[in-house]
Image (cartoon, rainbow, N blue to C red; front, side, top):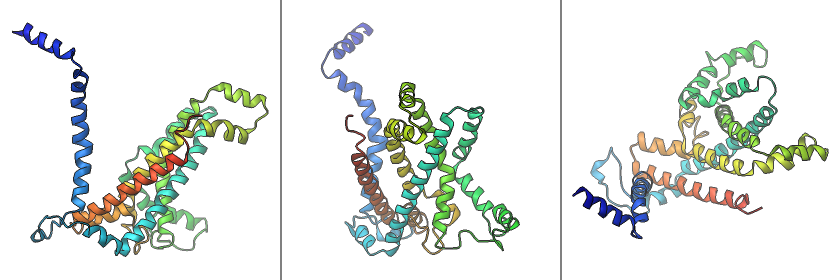
Length: 303
């Protein structure tokens, strides 16, 4: 019997359909963890789904949520803040990460120890980092207020996140502190992969620091920069944790972003249909933005 089964399996492995059968487990996994949740999220955005108003039912409402978004002033404020939040944070993290990567690439004495120290903010969970900075910037107990007042920079304790003009830039600064090691680590790995012959050729041509950076290092990091910027933009667009801890979207709506607005709609108002529409808008914006960025960065064109 067992020999007969072995012969059947051997017979199947000789057929042209056998490679497709091997793909079935992988395709089933992709469908279960990626495709089905995505389709369910899109489907949710077209439904009436309010957990505190179950009497309304869960039927389809068509484009009602999307039409409501067009008349929702909080949505437009959130969209504008999201653009500032994502673009500002990514640019600052990329700049700081590049500075750190270039400095560590010189392999000066103690650079291995410094590499670990610089990574510490990234090791901290975002919730812990957010609460840490909320405590340090506290208007009554914060160590930063005490230090600045002791140095004579400020006259009294300052409520850092109470000014609507400065709350978002201050939150961006905190997020930059937490996220720049992500760029620093990956850019440093990219710098280590640049052939030393290119540095030697640049030195023979008399290239200084800036010419070497512009003509050797930045071209060598082109793929890594594009990939890290896309990954970090997706992460920032979808993560409301830090703003939820530091400001809760305030004061007013000055730090309200789309992910935080969707979170509040879902878990404060239990309006999952509306939150689903917000999530789909974010999904589409990320798809279009990533496609445009990769396309116009020319990173996929052959050299």
